[in-house]
Length: 487
Image (cartoon, rainbow, N blue to C red; front, side, top):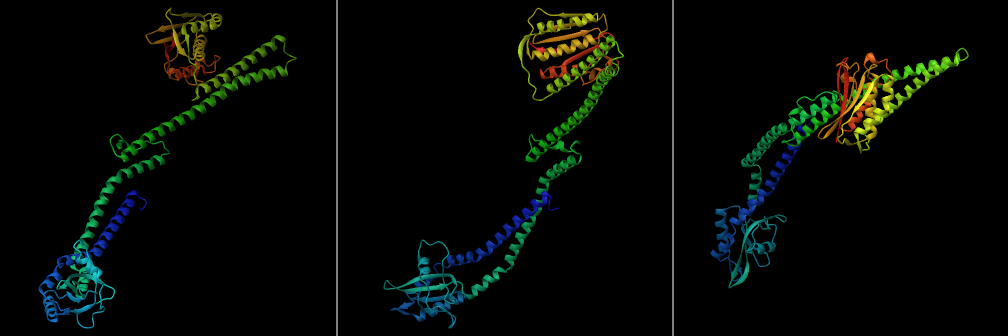
């Protein structure tokens, strides 16, 4: 439970609010007495001055006890917590209203008195409490002059011992308890509101975390539910995170499926390679073993025949291994093309000339239809030649004797299309989607010599040129392969 993000945020919020409330209450309790003292001093700031103006507290440098007694009695009736002291110019106590025995100081520090009398003073000033050797209290003071000569000061302590008990009562008063209760209620309300807000904010985080966990448990192969609600285009950071995770999960699923497909293709390729290598190897080994064991029993003609057959099987092995290496090189992500400008018409004529003798041996008519218009393209001439050779070789191989194979160029506004058409048996519709796969051969043609890699190589070459090979075939009528290049 404590690992949940909402719980951690809630505990953090509770701690911060509790700390702020405790700090606020502590600060209020600490400053409340000072505020009351400052208020009391400001309200009674002119008390001593007014008394000095009304009463002659000193006559001929002596204390006027009658006037002092009158002041004592008057102030005690108005405010019994006030204590009145008369001090000389050195701070020594001359007279006071407190009972005998309670006064602990016989002299007070006059520095606070002079600070209080400074008209520029605007904050709380505390002076010595004659009843306590360590405590200071708020006061009101005024100088006493006789014949314009300073005779002493009237020093009035505004909060006596009775006032100390009032502060203690204030700290435990009903109003203060009510105020603390209000703070606690406010804290609870803030916690409830904060919990609801945090729950609303973290709800999407919980959903996203749950989706991630389910995606992990599905071995990164199952589409994530409810993840499509996150739209990073106009949302906050959580929406952006969810949108990014959705895109990442889709890519991971795609990559996993691609890896699985590639793994299946690899297994199939290994099986096909093993099968295609096993047949010529077995035949090659059989004929060589026959020559080794029965060399003295075979005629020269038979020996030459066996050697010729073994050579053909070794040549087939060489071609298969060569085309496997070529396809592997082309499928490499770092495969690079060597672009150069060349005439497509001249290349078609050269390749057709290469296969003309082979076509004549089968009684086929190999023709080329070349336009007189310029047919220059920019491509890897070696790889394009390889495409032409593979397609023409397949057309000759799968066209029966007496048929026709035609190579034509169609020049458009921006592209030039090369077509290789034959009058062979054609390709069934269900076979067309698979003919570019490695080692795939139509069942009825498996007896023909071939590796099953020629069309896969041709398609990969055209993919590297940002193009493709199109197939149009009708059974018993013929097949047309075509590909286009930019002029």
